[in-house]
Length: 294
Image 1 (tube, rainbow, N blue to C red):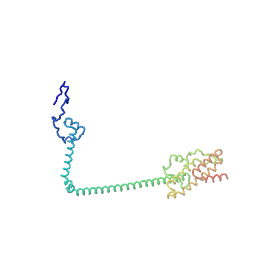
Image 2: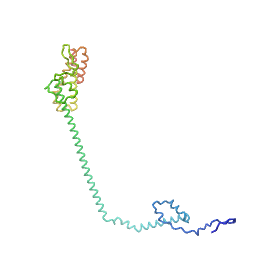
Image 3: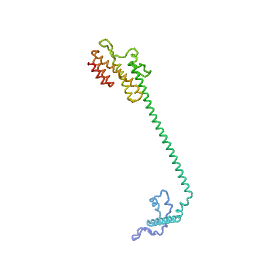
Image 4: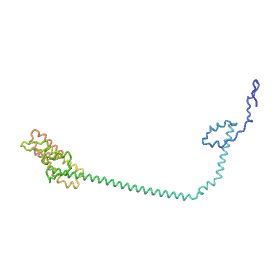
């Protein structure tokens, strides 16, 4: 190796010897280097800095390694080709296992269908019971309305003193209705509009007439809710018709008495006409007014 000599001006050669013949021959690339889990090409190339080898030689070595691996893979496939072909036939008892799995799946499917049928049957049963419950509740509501209807018919008959005049069953009066019981039995009356006519007689109480009209209107609303064609309501029609005629007769009497009430004549007349309108008896009111003018 030539060395650098200071002061030698006619040295036309290189300062270093470029002859690589004295460098060690690089070892072949190891396959283990390519089998690491986190193999990275850049890291692999950077680890080859100490190899005394040109880049082209490295490429040739890598190509040779690739060709060798391809040849080994082809030889391996050729050697085991018959084994690959006979792999399916070498599995004995597979058909029986597949059939067993198939039978198990069919059994499971049948069980699922049975459970689904049971659930569907139970759902229909519950739905039928719920419908029956709703129907029974509707029947119960109708029964309550019919009992209420019967009690109110009996109460109105008692208040109007028609029919058998039997007292209503205990507990049927509402709080706002119980305040009139005293005047039915001869006690103190709560009617504050009692007036005397010109001849000294007592005028018909408009408050009492209003209560009777309201109770009758409530009877008609109950009948509409239940259905006027219900056999029980049809059987009660004669009693209800008598109640209605009695209330209308009292209204007619009150209208006739308005001419004898002095300065309150117009007020009482309008009050009586409003009760006619409340009962939906406009025609009866017109007839009563015509008779009153005559």
